[in-house]
Length: 437
Image 1 (tube, helix red, strand yellow):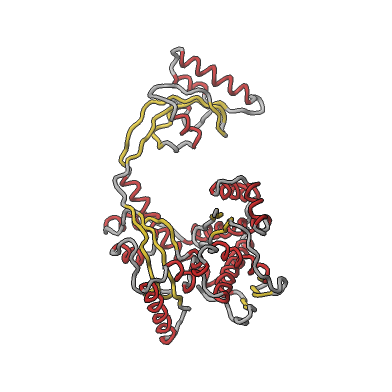
Image 2 (cartoon, rainbow, N blue to C red):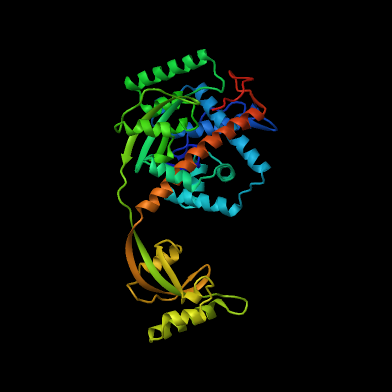
């Protein structure tokens, strides 16, 4: 079964399956199941997303919770999405059509389909391609909102990075985790805390008794990725919450932790796998180039012909550097005789990287085109450089950024919920406000 995969930076919104269409009962398509400020969630929206989840788990339906629990989980996710999209719109965030098209192309490619084939597969399943496109736009909008929030609220200093490395707090390698959250609202009473603790311990007991962890996450977890089986995917050690990393470091693959108390509830972790990280040797390239740009006065063909002529002169024995200094239109390095310095393979983009693969030391490339214009490039040499320290500092920065970003964004979501009017009209849960999550 093929699946369309799309995951956000912070909020995991699950997968959309491209399996065989299944017809599910639809009730009151035009009724309102939730009111969120000036927006609403229709029964048809809820049924559509519930149907996608049920299709995703068609081969293992026993992993899904009862229909009322599943509907509430999906409704919570829809409410969270609408709240974030509304805030992004208020903040002037707008995703251009070109970015949506590029994302749809990547999703189709990941599923080994063309966009046209993906459209046909969705239609055969009874899903609207236009609605799928709108969903992708919403997800990109939320991602942009999250990135803006992180950039405006989270700052990392060199002193913080130095402290992490000096104190040995940086863990190298990656881990693949899944988790279950039994959530607690802000200001929970002692009785509510004990009730949540008892539920978490009961879930752990069921897992120990043979219940699949993913199925337990779907049924019982209050986390946003519950419908993904609680899967966090592969992450560097230091891009998971510190408490998770501390516990996971002591676990073996396949092991499930006891319930752990956190600021938003009780967590149960499963370590799926880990990867070690060794010394990082990076191949660097030293090259120089000549750039000729097309313009109103110079056509694209004329620019190419100029580069071809300069290449011929260099091959005939003229000094490449002097030609670059006299003719290159790259203002960054023309005065340096076209010297690009030492750089990683992708340092100047994928097209330059492709050309580097064709060259030996001191060899001059054939003319090639990028978005800047026409180039000819000479490879001067290669070297292997130990970038472990640079990568370590980058990992420390990413660790601090990830942890601060997660805390800041979760705080932002709680504030967003508390400031919004949310009324649930789903039968059996009428009038309740959406949980803080």
